[in-house]
Image (cartoon, rainbow, N blue to C red; front, side):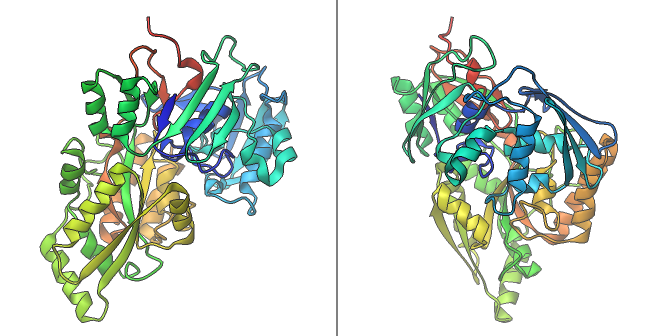
Length: 479
């Protein structure tokens, strides 16, 4: 048994998120991935053999031969194209179409080769595929058979097949007898259960009720080790932020955004939530990244300036009052409360924090019913999430950010293959962000590595991406 924080909203990759926190571990077990991301951030082949470009405009995807979906349908280039076209279809809900915005055409060259043409030079398009739900391909036969109900009948090429679902309680998967890696997976069945309380999840592994829980934050990692459980980690690049909704009052006013930015000391929040074990980020890229520009870092808060602006806006009849819905997990609950506590020390500002379950939270994001919204900009590379979250019209631009300097910097970050040019682009981006106050930069996940706590009776899971496990290789008894 494996315990994760929340159930998957859907088992249809066209509408799913590729991350642990939204149930991505279950989809990974059913579908496998075209690519995985190694501990150094390199893209590694899995169901695909390679993904190459010579000019940043035309990409060639080559698939692994001899793979079939669990229903016997061939895993081929036509299946990949069909899924990506389905995601592009305006009638398909969800946010995954953002990753295909640059695509102008897809051509099936042969059974195992797909040619993709982009509308602009992008040497990081492979990151968009490897880190998003584009990496999960369903059986086109099953999609055609079940239509809108496909999410309840998922069929992939991964190591496991769906056996049963009890929503918000558990999902049971059984071994795929047609899996492309002979002799794998090791287990006949995996049961995924869901509990947002990390402490309770650790206790379940400690007592033997479960054999693994993930992800586990730095505090829960400490608890797991004290319980004599094994912990495996891998670094995650990127940052986590709380974005202002610039499409509505009060944060369509830059002074309101500046006031809240200056009021919140994220180091203090992290001290309260993580006992100081992680820190607020310095940039949109990690300090150990070759893309980090030490001369351009996020501006510090300024409490005196914050109160001045709150008073000024109130005097103008524009007091700062907003809602902050948050994903109802232990860490996000504590972080939202810490933010609320800091703002309570100021006059002429109020915030209403609202816990939401994963399904409602996703709907809040899509509907725009928020003043402040949490968003993780995670990945082995700033692309594609930085562009999608900050560029005008970006598919994950939930803050409705629109600024020429930000647009220019995010475009430059994806259009060059040069590390020097990209470092300069992200340095310029930080400078533009400091002038526009688009978000509260909460923490860097490089200090809260993707991780899993597991029973020492079993082998260590191999993690990739944001800490998702390769389920085909986990489940052996430890030697």
